Length: 401
Image 1 (cartoon, helix red, strand yellow):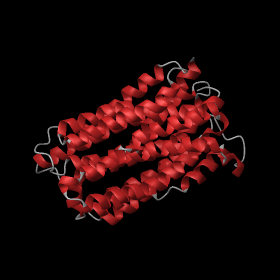
Image 2 (cartoon, helix red, strand yellow):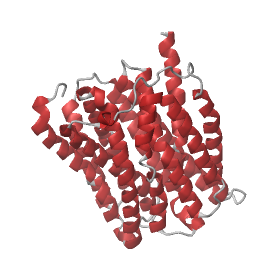
Image 3 (cartoon, helix red, strand yellow):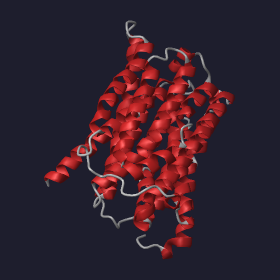
Image 4 (tube, helix red, strand yellow):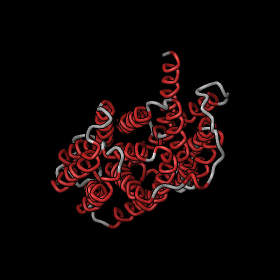
């Protein structure tokens, strides 16, 4: 029991540091104020946000290094790299080029960090893999709840209090997070601290292989991630675009509501017995959640759009863990390879997604911006339908679904 409690503390601390690594989540919440600060339009804003994805090839290097030397070393190196990136964001001033470069550096280290943390948690709890991954997802959702709310509150403060400049509320959070990450990186330096799980074999290219019939599942995970990220990044810009008569709830708080929905949904999912609803959670969450959000967008009402997003997120949030759980049960020895492939494709695709959304927002008139949001929203029903077709073809051959 003492060993389990100690490992649980290791996991909680690691996930807490991972939340700090997501401090760049405050950037979309600052939306038009940030664009005015930099003197840029939606196209440059989208390009700047997409720079987080340019370091996608580091996933392969980080995965190989994690297999060979253990995930702790990858975590330590990535914490240091992200601390440097946050230092760049701290001292970038109003130069968006420096900010874009710092975000690119952040992405270079964050992508392998996410894979290494999952590997680290699985090694800490080899008999409770799903709960370990749920802990990571829940921790990420807590950060996604807190950081946008914090940013919305700071933004309101800078508008009310003349003594608080926008530059201060933008740069100081990165300075604080970077300092904590720099200090935290030293916790993973010694072999007997924060877990003793080291790599046991050399990296082999054959370890990257995934059975072809499971590639569609990885593709569906990719579609889910692209849609969720695109909506999460661009919904604050849409809600604050001036298309609505009144902004009843700050866009940052709406994004935080999305995170609360994720926390509740995935916590409930984590408590369900392992075998319940495996087929249902692959199909219905995306169809129901995506359709609900689309109806909210079509309503043209701010509150209906906001609440349909939160409730839709509560539904579709069960989709990704269900697909990940499927891979974990069917190909347990290839989960790392599947996650690495997904992370690689996801990082590369998000570069084009955010640039594409930025170009669409720049070209559409304000009253037509809902059309841009419909595109990622439609991905969720497509994932549910795709999973249903996949199950019809391969469901009889699966061991656990």
